[in-house]
Image (cartoon, rainbow over all chains, first blue to last red):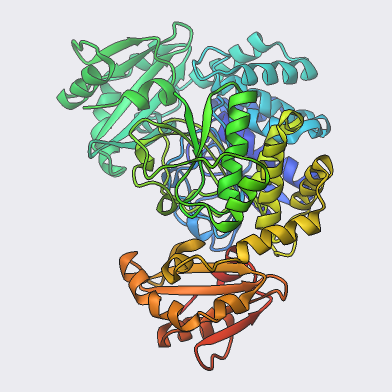
Amino acid sequence: MTIQVFGHKSPDTDSTGSPIAWAWYLSEVRGTPAEAKLLGQPNTEAAFVLERWKLDTPEIISDVAEGDAVVIVDTNNPAELPASINKADIQGIIDHHKLVGGLETKGPIEIRVEPLACTSTILYKMMGKDIARAPEGVKGAMLSCILSDTLGFRSPTTTQEDEAIAHALAKDLGVDIEAYTEEMLAAKSDVSEFSDAELLRMDSKEYTVEGVGLRVSVLETTSPKQILARKESLMGAMPGVAQEDGADEVLLFIVDILNEEATLLVPNDRVKTIAEKSFDATVEGDSVVLPGVMSRKKQIIPVLTM
Amino acid sequence: MTIQVFGHKSPDTDSTGSPIAWAWYLSEVRGTPAEAKLLGQPNTEAAFVLERWKLDTPEIISDVAEGDAVVIVDTNNPAELPASINKADIQGIIDHHKLVGGLETKGPIEIRVEPLACTSTILYKMMGKDIARAPEGVKGAMLSCILSDTLGFRSPTTTQEDEAIAHALAKDLGVDIEAYTEEMLAAKSDVSEFSDAELLRMDSKEYTVEGVGLRVSVLETTSPKQILARKESLMGAMPGVAQEDGADEVLLFIVDILNEEATLLVPNDRVKTIAEKSFDATVEGDSVVLPGVMSRKKQIIPVLTM
């Protein structure tokens, strides 16, 4: 049975590129046939990466069947995975997020989680010398994953290992890291074709804080003005998105990558309270700038309170 | 803060030796002070190993405090860990069991699970070349863990990696694997000083099968006669142990290591049904021999039904 390798339901570059890289490794090095899948439309950056490295867009699947052989990368959170995930035959989990609990396996399997910025950094370490056998597209995908997750080494999640491995891949591929990162970020920042609801869900994770369900959405961009110009209609779309997704509030953080700050939209008093208590900020009006905030994982989720 | 490294609540050789080995590695190689702990009295085999390799018996702790830095080895099951485990600062999990779910971490941490027979095999791989720096006691503990978990390579859980690494350690230490395994198994088989209730809890894990709580206990021995002579009083102690531990039934499998078979005690009709349905066996009287059954993980848990 072909192993299905996939990331989470909002495929960014890491959740698109890492399945491609690991499916290659499983198939060509370990000799266990595997195929990358997506659990949703890749975002604009991921779509750019696929085209840049001439990679086929993996098939988009909506669920898995009982007994399907799967390897999960870039998440261990059942809420970000197909509804039937615990009925599948989970054969591996490779991730760099905190352990959420909720995934169960039938027997002992291969699990590798490391506190690094990017799944592909872990994959590179696991591949060892076999990385040399990888085709250019696989290496390019992995480099793109690291540059995406580290925002070109700007994110505080960046570790020495992420940076060293990205440099090794870039050297091997003859890629100028700065110029290429700029191209990727520009692709990510072009959100003109997305609806407000799509933007609110594009890079979003669900959390419960003190019994309140939060959709914590992040838009990393080099042109925050483009998004802030849509502030009113984005806030107008929040109640509908929250209701459809079974959440109480949508928190939208617009991360200005170049200025290294985030703007949180504040549509109502409850979000105002969350903003003030979590970030020790004073909110006036319908948004608040949070200097230095770049990472949901390191700087938003750990401090959320209300 | 010193990191506490521990295994599960019924410390066998792997849950005693692997914390010692990993605490050494964290302290001496990674430079993060760590100390091995035990969550209960080591079993007779583990006690023998500590003495044989001149290792101090780690301190026995009953719980952890909020914020304590801990690394968990040889389990990922909250039921086998201190009550306050999810309040601790879990910094690492290294294990070779199926993922149960239930552990949560505050941030991304180091997690390594592999489908190998023994935690120490994984530790050895993680240590890489640094194993050469380990003192004899650490290497001896790791070798003992592998020989214990594989029953001297007899258990079907044994992998090529377990075997190769045990041979490398034995060669390095100048240990005769067969003779040493025999000593360890003899130590484990001497259970004369334990009460019936202690025997039922010595190597025991809790599972729920179709809503029924089972304490699945295994006694691996080279002299099954010694235990079977106590059959009546062991069965007499089962209802009390089950009640005290909040289980419905105790399943005691006496694993005859040399003859590679298990005897399951059958104190009542419900256990008889479990035995017959799970192992396709016909039960006559108060016990049943299950040829070839050596491993709870591979041959008991996956088939349990009622």
